[in-house]
Image (cartoon, rainbow, N blue to C red; front, side):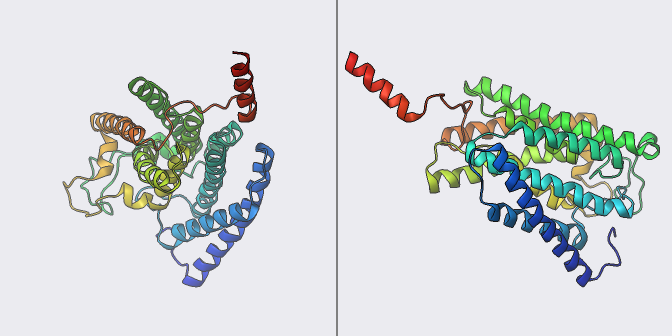
Length: 335
């Protein structure tokens, strides 16, 4: 157990501290958003959201150990450090979601800062990973508490280089795959279905979680987009729903449920299929990546047909609507 020895009172106290930190972080995010946007977002809303997220995440980490993976056991200080590390990611996701919903864009000030923070903190600590850069689970007798997973020796000996490696790999995987989907779906649909803000957002997420969790986020995001996009279409009749919030929602699901995602199915029986086995074999990994890419493009096409998300680059004309109407009226009179 990663947080053994903590009683219920201590857990609730730590969750309360996480909530208080979330209140302060929400206030900081609100002030930051007021600098990036023309209108200032309501501080109480962002404070409430971040407080609930950080309190819930702290409780999930120490109460049910939502990120506990065998053979990935950081030292005790960095177990708490991972809560702070991913708490920062949650705050950045809230900021990105807020701006994308209100202005259909994700400023580089959020994502680029997040990339730098993710890679920098991962390198400095050397012990914040959710999963190692490479772990071959296939030689194990599939009894997680008795077998020995194959982990490269350099990972054990060079923690800081490993931190740089897994974070950079996650950044490249998240940004690269999203950019590839942007290009492929643009060719299939005739228009780009994702903006560059979505590409940089996934790169930022990858810098905090690594390349393996990014693949799960990549596969979960279309389902989040399809579900909530159709709900938004039915309830608000909006012409489009930005895709960034669904990437953020999928990232939050992975952060809160990583233990059960990676260990599924956790039967402990030798020779049985397990999701984690796919990440130790190059052929299986290529098939998994291809299936994720194909499914992502297919779901984007389905959502496009329902008109739930935009498929064009969202740009705003330099002239406000009133000015355009006046120009058209003058042209009609001249005609």
